[in-house]
Length: 150
Image (tube, rainbow, N blue to C red):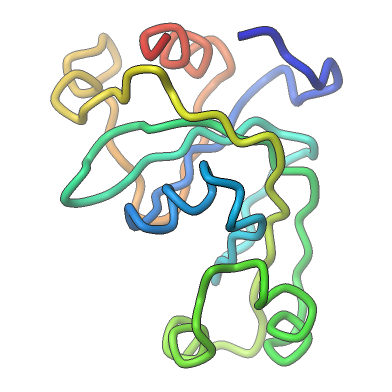
C-alpha cells in the first residue's frame, strides 16, 4: 500500500478506536470528520488505523488525518456536525461536561482486504491493546499491521 502522501508523519501513526457503525461510515466515505473530547498530539497529515470496537473487535482499515481543529462546542457542531455521522443528541451526550472538543478531518479511507481480529493483534510480538479512544504506534508497527491485512 504505497503512501499517497509522501509527507506523512514518518515516525508514528494513530489508532482510532471507533464504534463499528462509525468505522463503516468512515470507510464508506460518509463520515469525514471524527469528533473527540481529547485532542491527539499528531503532526498532519498522519495515517490513522481504524479499530472497530465490540462486537467487531478488529482493525478494519486506514485513512489520513489532514487537520486537527479544537473549538468550543457550538462552533464544533456548526462547522463539523454534518460530516460526523452523529445526531445532535448524540453529540451533546458525548461532549457533556466539557466546553470544547476536537474535529479530525479524515480523507482517503481504505478498508483492509482482511480485517485483523483482536485475537490476532494480541498474538503479535508487542501484544496490541485496543485504545479506549486513540493511541499512537510507531510507523514500523503500523506498516506491519497494514501488511498483515493485505
